Amino acid sequence: MTTTEPTRLHVGGASPYDVLIGRDLAAELPGLLGEGVQRVALLYAGELAEQAESLLEQLVPHYDVLGLGLPEGEAAKTAEVAHGCWEALGEKGFTRSDAVVTFGGGATTDLGGFVAATWLRGVRVVHVPTTLLAMVDAAVGGKTGVNTGAGKNLVGAFHEPAGVLCDLARLDTLPREELVAGLGEVVKCGFIADPEILRLIEETDPATLTGDSPVLAELVRRAVAVKIDVVVDDLRETGGLGGHPGREALNYGHTLAHAIERDSGYAVRHGEAVALGCVYVAELARLTGRIDDDLADRHRAVLGRVGLPTSFEGPEFGALLEIMRVDKKARGDQLRFVVLDGLARPTILAGPPEETLRAAFDALAPHETEKR
Image (tube, rainbow, N blue to C red; front, side):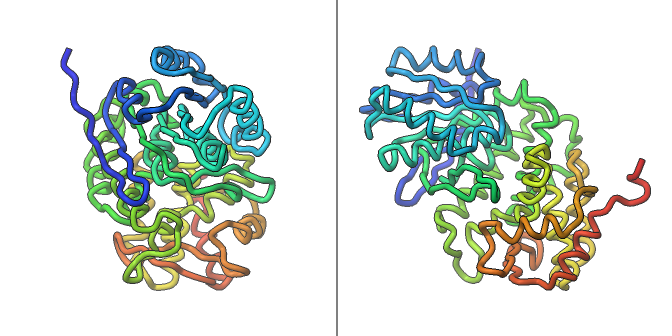
C-alpha cells in the first residue's frame, strides 16, 4: 500500500510549529513532541476511549504515558475539570520538559491546551483534532480556554502548540451532522479571506464532502492556511496592519454564535451557531450599507447548501443581547462585530444602534416556506 506525504503548513512567529494534514499520521506524533520528553499526558474526549486506547499503545514504546478521559463536549471546559488534570499531572510528576497531547474535538483541544498553558506556566502540547471543527479552528492558533457561568471562553491563555496533526482518516467515522457543523468555520474563512473556498463548495455536490474527499482535504488546507496567515501577524488579537482587524477577523459571526450557544446550554453545535452568526453579521453589513444584497444573500446560499442553518427561532433578542454584552470581544459598554466591507474585506463595526441589531436579528426569522 502506498502512502501519501502529508501536507505540511508552517506557522512562523516566536514559537514556530507545523500543521500536518493527511491520513494515518500517528507515526508523526513523536517527531512533533520533540526530544527530551519522558512523560506524555493524553487528554482525550471520553466518548473516544477506544480510539484513544489505540493512540496510547503507539505512544507507550516511547514515553511514560498518562491517559486522562474528559467529559463530553463543552462539559469538559470547566475549572473543575482543569483542576482534576492538574492534580493528575502533579501525582505523576510532570515537569516542564514533559508534554500534553489532546485527542478530540474543539472542547477537548481548548481544555487540554489550557491545562498545558497553566501547568508549570506552560508545557509542550500537540493537538490531534478528531473533528473537522477542531482541525480548522481550535487546534491552530494557540487560543485555549474554559467556560464560566457568564459566558464561553472567558478564562484562558494564549499557548501555541508544538504541532498539530490533522488526520483526515479521523473524519471517516465522524457523524454527518458533526462534519456539516465543522463546515461553518470553513465557510467563514471563505468570506473573510479566501473566496476559493466558497467556489469549491458552490461547485461541489455537498453529499460528496466526506472524510476521504479530495475537495474536503483542500477545504481543510485552505481554512487552516487562512487561520495561519492571520494569527502569525496577530497572535494575541491586538490588531492587524493597514486597517485589517487582524486575528479579530476570525471572530466573524462569533458574537451572536456564542450567545446562542450559551443560551441553549451548548445544545446548538458551535459550527451551526457560527453559521447563524455569519448570516446575522451579513445582515448587519447590508443594513449599514457596507455590502450589497448579492453578497449578503450568498451567505445564506453557501451555508444552506452544505446543510447549515440560516434561520433561527429561539429566545427573544433581548436575552441574547444581554449575553453578547459580556462577550470577550466587547469593549466597555460597546459591542463590536466583525463585518465585511466586501468579499474578503473584514472590518470592525463598533457600537451599532440597538434598532439595527434587532433588525438584523429579525432577518433571521424563518420564511413562511421554512415553517412547518
